[in-house]
Structure formats: C-alpha cells, structure tokens
Length: 121
Image (tube, rainbow, N blue to C red; front, side):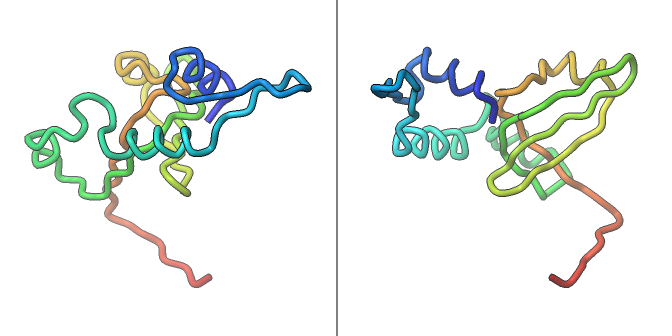
C-alpha cells in the first residue's frame, strides 16, 4: 500500500502511529494487523453480501487493497495486493472511473479463467 494510504488511515484514526525523536512517523504493527484483519473479514460494503457472493460464477475471489491505477484514454491497469499476492487487472478506463478505483481502495479481484498455467517451483 502507498504512504498516502497509511497517512490517511493514521489521520482518520484507523491505525495507530507514533512520532519518534527523529521526527519520523512509525506505524504500530499490532494496530495495522488488526486493521488488515478487519478489512479481510468485512471488506468493502456489499462485497460479502450473501446474495452477491452466490450470484457470481467466479469462485476465486481475492480481497485486497488497490496499490496503483494507470489510466489512459481507453484502458486502465489496476494493481491490487491481496495478502501475499499481486494481482493486475486490465479494464476500460470508463469502468475504473465508475467504480472509483484509486490507490487505497479495498476491492475484490474475481478470477475466472479457462486457461491456467501450472509450473513447478
């Protein structure tokens, strides 16, 4: 997640922070972990709604935080961090704008594919 997202969360009181003797702000790890757990459990409004969850055919749903949105005139690239995974989606800029996708927004990446490549480590 971005520094700006953390600053907004500190200012909103969503996560605790302290200013050290050197003037640098440090985020309390336990407070951040509690917030991450809450976000993972509740997600954005409506995302965990039972009717919504059963009306989608994609079963691979990863809740995460948008870390970057790169827009051009027609298409946008949206990057999310979902736990330890980085997920990138390409969509129309119109769709990204309508959804209000910006860094720091909690979203769900629904993955459905007819082709999955499996590699050995």
